[in-house]
Amino acid sequence: LCTLLSDHRLRGDAARALGEVGEAGVPYVAEIAQLLLEPDDVAKVAALEALSAFGPPCEPFVDRVLACLDDEETEWVQQSAQLFFSKAQESTVMAAVAVLDAWAADEEPEVQEKAARRLGALVDLGISLEPSG
Image 1 (cartoon, rainbow, N blue to C red):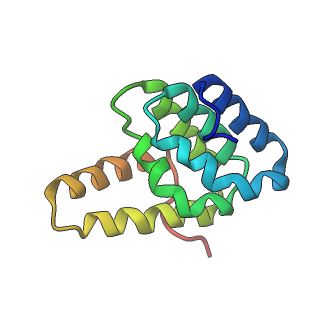
Image 2 (image 1 turned 60 degrees about the horizontal axis):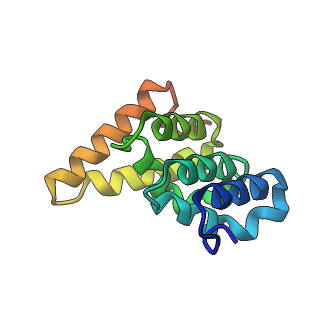
């Protein structure tokens, strides 16, 4: 539904609605995460809001959320990604750290730079990047 609708505001509304239904929306996490790849800020922010409600089921798409931390188009998307991570469960943060570690080990300096920038954004938020206990 989120990706089938042609209007970006309707796609965003569909994503938000799925985020509000709780566990019943989990089967649609991949579809909601797809909105993070769209150029439209309204759809991205709605997807980030919805995904933050799901916790661990969104972990396979944490790389897309990380990309929103330094979205070049708008600060609104960046702030929504920051809010996502500030609310995230530890397992989601650890999934993000694993992605960033893999990017940091990449041979391409541009990928390493993105990893460092996004890691810095998480640190700036005061998010612990170490597992507890």
